[in-house]
Image (tube, rainbow, N blue to C red):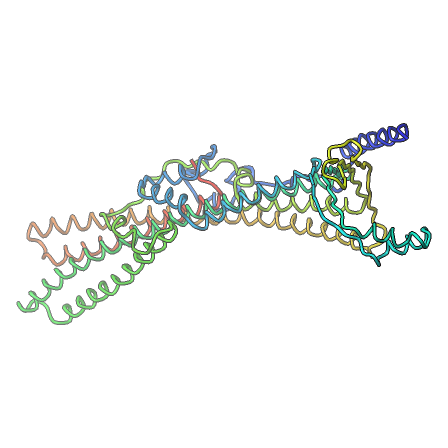
Length: 499
């Protein structure tokens, strides 16, 4: 009997070694192959790049952190707001929690590769039924004179003590577990890419509302200056009317101009309130908490932008979080094919158990109370009306869908970058034209003021030229805001900042 037990143990060990070898070399399903993307060789191949003119954006360089990229604006207040948003934004906190969940799920999946060990034990008081199935057996094998004694003996209450250990291990014969780990890794990467997307979007939103706020504050300041200037013009026209030099028509026209300027103040103030509330929400603060901190502090102008190195166009594929997320979905879909394919084949579980069982607690530690078992179990799918094969076909179609979605995301990325470059370059050209117009208007104003000082013209002509200069300054301020917003959009379309 001992020899037979040794043979069984040897065969079990041999089966373990065989299963381990098979699990190392048999993996169901296709291997993931990263999709090939045809990226432009350089930014000059994009439609918008031909409009840049001076090549300010066409350099190559390595990417830097997002906060360092936004530091190009030379706005310390903006940098501080962005850092606080990263620390306090509630949506971003949810993203961090989801990322942590994905990592824990991956750890749970990887635990399937190791043997499972469990301990059990118990003590119970039991009684057999006097009329149960055991009674039928006693009646069949025992003499009639002893039947009742045996039934009384079996039905007497008794105690049962048990303690033991169970171990099991399912060898990964067809790669089901390894594919599950690949899918879990892809989900971790997906959660990380989503987190990066939220971070980038958060920083861009903070910058957008900040520049909209500063632009609106600029507009209000310039409007108040315009109102004061046109009030002086009105007073001058009223004086000329009293002196008989002008009629009431000119005065009424100036009243209309002044009224139109005053109607623009309330919308600009409302825009400031909206921007302040949006910023406080992004920073996880209550409405109005940033009013004092971000009150108007003089005229704002966008900092001169240095040469911006965009890196290579192929970098966009590696750095845009939405492309990384799409590739992670494709990797997971590929791994799911292997998981579904592995379910077509048999599953083998190697198990062993060792324990003690006795009716007397004092005998629980006796060697004779031992019991053990060892051996494999297997399950083989025979017929399920094609459910498993259908599952494989479904996973393959889902992989095709993920591959198409990946190509679409990449294509959309090129269009977003091209559109962002177009908007930024067009606004830069617009700003250059406004600066040229402002220079000519300022020259005309200087000449008019000199003519007034020499007694060759009245002060009204100089005031009207001042108004023309102010109009261009308002347009230039609006252009500065749009330029900053377009540059923020360019940062976001690249999926990172630019050095």
